Length: 266
Image 1 (cartoon, rainbow, N blue to C red):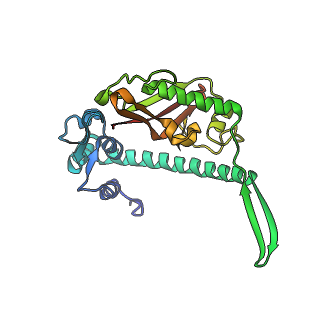
Image 2 (image 1 turned 60 degrees about the vertical axis):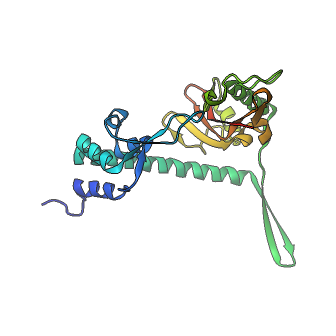
Image 3 (image 1 turned 90 degrees about the vertical axis):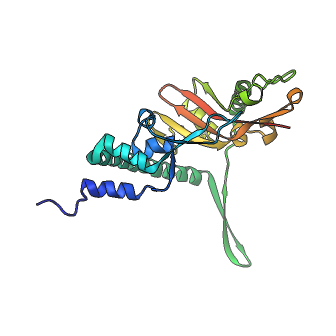
């Protein structure tokens, strides 16, 4: 006799199917992630292009749920899908544990940076907590400035002289990415506004990388206007996107920063 309390492969597959939207049109990225498919699998399916155009990149492909479901079950079978689901659940549980540990470490950092004062007032005893926000050292300020200059150069900005737009209108770069070697853990922590966390305990490591997202103006330590350049001869404004993604690989001490580029005529 089997254990009736343990869900069968069919039950797990049914739960997986119930969690998907049967009326939804699914993007390529979501199709690969949620249906356990590859680009070669999707190449055989009908899709609907959405968006895209001159200056904003290619269209996004959207697929029908029933086609994706049929392809996934035909490729993996019910047992194969169950194995994929179990493996994903283990990864997500491991990720949750890492995030919880990092959250506890961040709380310890906050506690270490805070001071409490208590005073008597007309409404009784009042306790005020003040959190000291660490300031950048001159080395980190210079590094932020240097990284911003690298991004501007990557996008076609020039820090001096006449501004020349290397890519005109529709051929302007949509995304940018820069890489910097030789970044220590301590330097990365300081760039992430946690200079005392030199062991990176308050960060979540996924695989070989730590990944963080910040508002571009905050990360580079400048006003929003410093992220925009107006090219007068072409009547075009180019702007560094509002957010940046920072990835750090401690084993090789490599730091990469990426984001999007916005461009519009005036």
